[in-house]
Image (cartoon, helix red, strand yellow):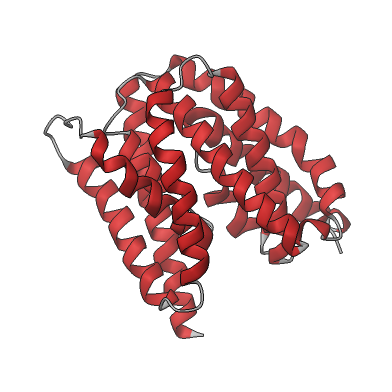
Length: 252
């Protein structure tokens, strides 16, 4: 049963989709942090994951095409191969890694890093590109394990790229790559055959497109320093979400 049978739930779904893609259009990252927890209150999780993956891929393509000239390709050529290796590693760890403890540790690290950066008054220094293999591998692995590969990429890229347009475009392309791999896995596993996927896309794509348009306009008017601080705020949200999932899993 799709949420369209409940007008109130449908409006809530449309509103959270629009808000999530305002965030995505502004930062190139983060829509699923808001959309997945809300939509799972109304829809089956496999359907929500499929919807989020397709919508996020469309958002990443839009951001990537819009800012393709700004993307730092020199960063992507290092991140992408190690991200792929990390994704393969994540698949192998699915059966052996203590999932709840790993989820909690990752949440504490990502959220703590965001808090530290927001609280720090020192100017952020640029790190070496030698950190790219680690960031790519962790991002690929966490994307496979927990469906959240963006934060490790973001932690690295915010310490490498100062220009807000280049940062968003590069992050958008990394999200595109990560989602393309995840959609391939979903397709092979039959997740994309979920009943209601086509109907959900018909309703949610316009809301996502509106959100992307608004987010892009906000991004063009915002100062680079503000964009970076909001990104650190999203890291806190990401870490909190992972930690909450770990606590729920531990109590069940």
